[in-house]
Amino acid sequence: MEPPPQATAARRSPVIPIEAPEYSPEASPFASRSAPLPRDETPAPATPLPSVPPPPPAPAPQRAAPKSRRTGLGLDTLILSTGLAVTCGLVVGYAIGWNKALATKAGPIANTAPLQADTPSTPSPAEESPESMPEPELAKPPEAKIAETAAVPEKPPKEEEEPMKVLTAPEAALRAFLAAPDWQSRTKHSVEFKKRDAAMADYYSSAPDGAITPLSVKLLESRDGDDGTAETHVYQVTTSKMPEGIPVAVMKAEDGWRVDWGTFVELHDDHFSRFAGGQGNTEGFFHLLIRITNFAPKREGYTAFRLDPPMAGRDRYGFVRSDSELHKALASLTDWGKPGQVILRLQRNPAEDGKNWLEITDLVSAEWWPASE
Image 1 (spheres, rainbow, N blue to C red):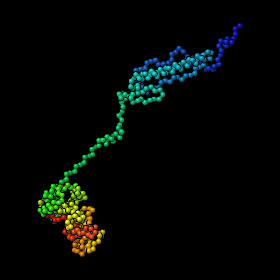
Image 2 (image 1 turned 180 degrees about the vertical axis):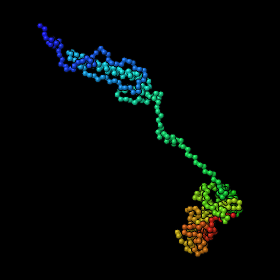
Image 3 (image 1 turned 180 degrees about the horizontal axis):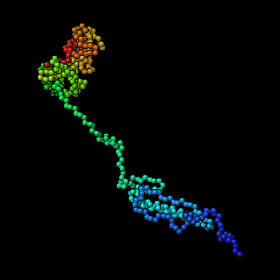
Image 4 (image 1 turned 90 degrees about the vertical axis):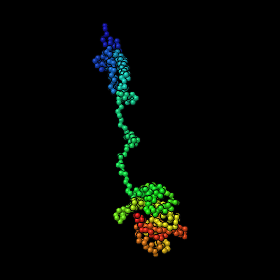
């Protein structure tokens, strides 16, 4: 008597209680064990890869092998799944290595964009080729332009040249007077030169002689004569000896223009300061500005006036007898704030305290410049 079929199956193989979904050969990834794995066996083309290749295909997500209802298939399925995962990993790794090898053989363009596994990397400048990837011209920074400008300064716009100055006859005579190498040459350009020879010879016997180089010559004023034409020109002349400048008169003569040498030498050699300081003779003639003053020291029987040569910082006090006609004449030439231009005769007198004081003894002229010849 044969046992029932259920008992026979139980004796043949123990039943493993595995719950599995309905098995279908078409739905199983292992439907055909003999079918080859899907892989691209076509050799890579020799052309360069694109600059940014697509990321390598990720392995297909593994689905859990359906558990067969048939007995004895659970262990085999686990082994096959493990083998398939290892095989897929090897295939993916081989594909990545193959692509890298092709990129290396492709040349500089392939090197500029290697395969990227996770994070894209910037190619190093050493790997870039100037032929394949020309470097664009970069504009120079502002600092470079500034440096170039500083190194090679631009030429300033050409200014209009001043027209050559044409010297007037009086100024030409003045410059010739100053440029004379000695007093003998200077007499030809001086007023009343025939009468000045003896005085100039005596003066330059002890005073230094030679040409005088002016720093500047500027016209101050011109005075007309009776016929309406200019007869006297006054120039402000600055020199290294008198940098503040002195007035010099140039007057019309029968044969041209001549310089007032006596006034020039008195101011240029600072005769008034030397005389007031105790040098030279005790009497002299000087071109001065005279002013009324209340600040002079008192002197019994005298009235004081302030005396200034036409250079700053050389003022002194001069005294005149209060009851004299000279005092009245000087008072008529002055007013508060309005000095008079005069030529005075002065006498230097000693004082009890050892200091000198100046006495006005004569009004030589109420004008600085002598009449023209």
